[in-house]
Image 1 (tube, helix red, strand yellow):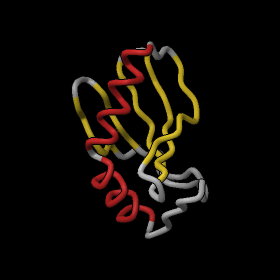
Image 2 (cartoon, helix red, strand yellow):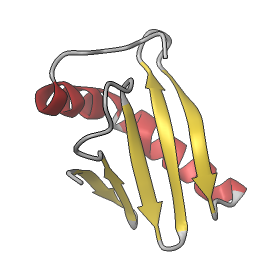
Image 3 (cartoon, helix red, strand yellow):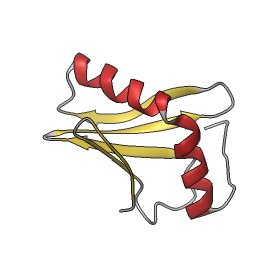
Image 4 (spheres, helix red, strand yellow):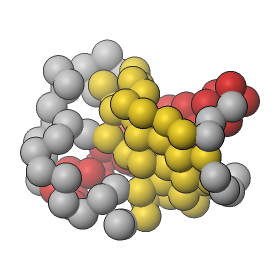
Length: 88
């Protein structure tokens, strides 16, 4: 599970082998965890699933991912090849 970011207690990471899924990250802070799809075509995020996430934590991780959007996409492409599935 390669870690991409450690920010404000959040660990943002990829799983090494999730098949041919579009660009996404997993994020975990304490008991809160989620999976976010990165919509590169419209610079947006879509929550795939979440567990233990309060509204405040949802806002916090969304802001972190938006702030590091380009870095995450670059790291995804470096690790998994340039397979930017923008149309999720």
